[in-house]
Length: 375
Image (cartoon, rainbow, N blue to C red):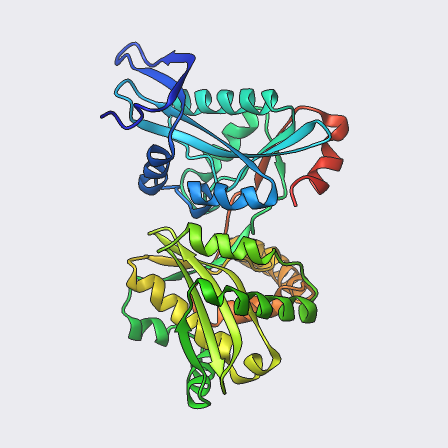
């Protein structure tokens, strides 16, 4: 059976070069075909998997997948588009995507189809957030090309700057790559009797209680208990709930994921007792080992102050010293600076993604919707 035999085809085709005629077709792929593309594509990401769309449905998003298939039915590019409506209009969003082919013929066809879908859904704007680091060779060409397609740069929803930990070495080398303080905290937690176990569905309540405690202490918003339960269920076996217990009480919890390529540190919390005992450090060390054991080559710590990402991307020349110091000073005032210190202690490299790109349909409403519709 062809990989997209169950997909509904649109009446939209494009013929390739005269030297090697190829017919490309815009299709709406089924879930299996789509996830197979995400898995094999070099820019494939957890947020482009079908399970992520199912999870975001809890928050009111709808999904529409658009793909380009070649003459043999194989998917060569595509995007998982999330749409959320309000007041008869909508916002259309491609998190950590699209999955571009790197061929302007194919990618132009994909962009045209996405813009058409967003317009039909009465979108105020269409947002793309490519899964591409600034340092990658095709980042600058893609940035320039999207401008020619009518997109404007916008602040992304997903973290633009992060830390990626290399998991290609063995566990001993991975531990040695942690800072001296983090290694000491991990060992201290073990000495004080902090025990780590892998949770099941019945432990989501304990996880949520930890998240509520952390939210109240740190003053940040959290999802519903059902959201976290669905997240754990939808990504099994590539989701892992790790619980840290001390004296019979749950004192910290991490809910982490991987997509076969990278691990992702998305949701975590701790009580005051857990923080004091170093439970978060021990849990994250277990999370890194879990992703490594499952074959991941890296681990995304998911979000640090963007000023640090900007500073890291500056060329190492005398002329940039002042600018780098100014950005690093700015980062010290960022609420995420403590989170950065925690994440950086596990080693890894600061990275920065390309920004978001918005195609605006209704300019008078764009500013308002950009702030309110994407939360």
